[in-house]
Image 1 (cartoon, helix red, strand yellow):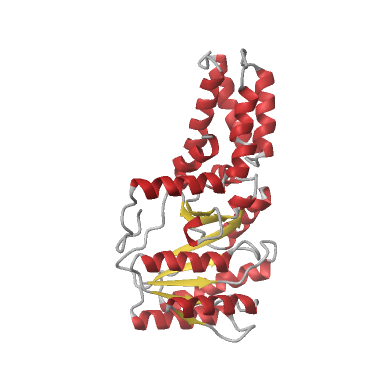
Image 2 (cartoon, helix red, strand yellow):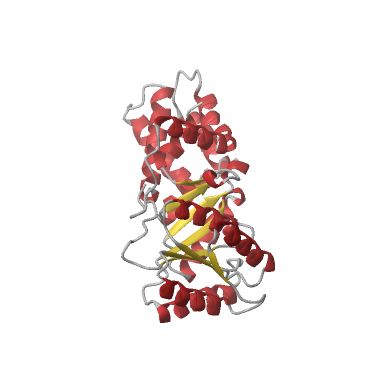
Length: 321
């Protein structure tokens, strides 16, 4: 764990095994399409040839690993085959796992809460339906359990349910929620919340911004306004811009990520709904193209199913049966 001060206790071996099992269960649909699909493809093959690579290409694309990432993988495997560096199907599968793990290496950077920055401001962004508000609540609870004091800014003023959802969560967990009426200026909400958080010496402020389509340029411009207004209170804010992406939409998630990165300085990703899709390969495509840290993945409904991203655990969960 790398959360600065207030770290959670080290997991016991039993807890670690339990979390690993939950991760495997959460990624079961992607494992079936990718890991098991590859194992079945290679099972009993006596000869590794171009036919194998063509079938491998289809399997990778169906798992939403993406065209660019797939071609990169195939190019490396072809070179190994040409050098006769792969003896059998087990060697090919092992190299494939190594390539996938190397691809995810740049994303293996957990969120670090700087203890000398109070409040540490996290700005949640993404499209409607990606799970921003739910993720905000889960993340806030996890940080609260680590000993941090929190405040939430209900800056999704276009969806009344989002404000109510955050307020209900705040009441249950004794966390202040700064909110205004429906349709209020989200930048004004963040401005007020940051002022209040500074005055009260709160450790972390999480701003839940309104969902918006990545193609809505006027709403993307509003995100830039939120950033500018917060910087009038604290010039270094926000300290983390966390983009929430829905894995179940596959390649569209990559396009969303590109657009949000152009609009605001996205510093980390949270990829949700991996438990409900066979398109978990999109994680590789996103990292391959954008080289952004994945702070969290969502593999279920409970608070513990919002997991800090671990590249090795992720790859292992896809291939181990």
